[in-house]
Length: 417
Image (cartoon, rainbow, N blue to C red):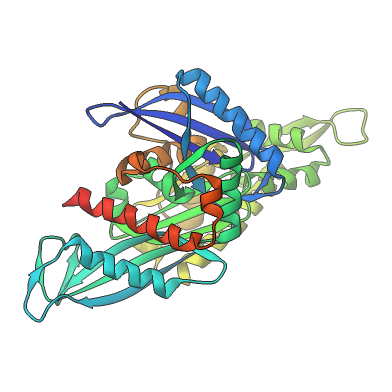
């Protein structure tokens, strides 16, 4: 049995999830810890001590439920300071056709990473999308095939160095080692998307409290990743201004009475609230509440649609439509709103592929935590030692990060041979 623990540090909550991998390769969730998030705002650490305490509380709860001592975690990374780009490059294999091996792909990935380097950012993922071997297109996996020239499209994701290191520092200051780290949006996609959806083309949206992550899969691979600094908390704040109530009341009203499409709400429906400074409750139109919610959702989706259009991909090419996950996916009417806005099929994304505590983890708000464990399972991160804080802070840590990235990629290619 092998243990994997994920740590998802969000704007509203911190989640620690303990998974146990059995001899058959099945993943059993044996512990969950959850704590209100403090000292974190939309991916940024705003107060280290509060963030560390939130992590400690989540880890403690997960340990008590699982009955095991947790020493390291798979860390989720998210925030507005994340960029992605697609790089295309070609390497000559030999004048005479020869067998393609992992080292040829490594060369392509190294060149893509080098070309995408940017001061103040660190590359956290470099994912080969598709290959052309000599003149043959549509190559999914070139290893073992014969050819003279190999071309690849590589999706490169980079994160602000300060955002990355400060997120890592939260875990490390809590006494927890970092076995590996992954982009939160890719983790959520791993948890909620099917292989068929990725192949057909799909837009996955993870809308949490402070951030909205999105990933576009096209022809079976990642084409675009992005993050917006807006989420469910923005909707809650809009409600506070509209009704003139406090944040706690607004969140409760959003959950209990909110709807994502205003024209699906009866004009006559009203909600009893007690605005600030008022002694008596007053009635507020539920339809108007839905209008406030819909306006903010339309703003978010417009930005996502704009980001997709700038990458020269047509939404109509995403035949599997939209999958939304994260806490905001549970907002009533969300599926219908997305179908109408994008004119595509939509569904709510629930974490899949795990055993145990199903009633708890099969919830959109746990998509990232579940996905981190699944990505770690695939990447062979289980056996990789973590570096203590002092070692990670030494000069040349960028080179170390690059080495770790290439080590993961090598492990991946060993697995698929």
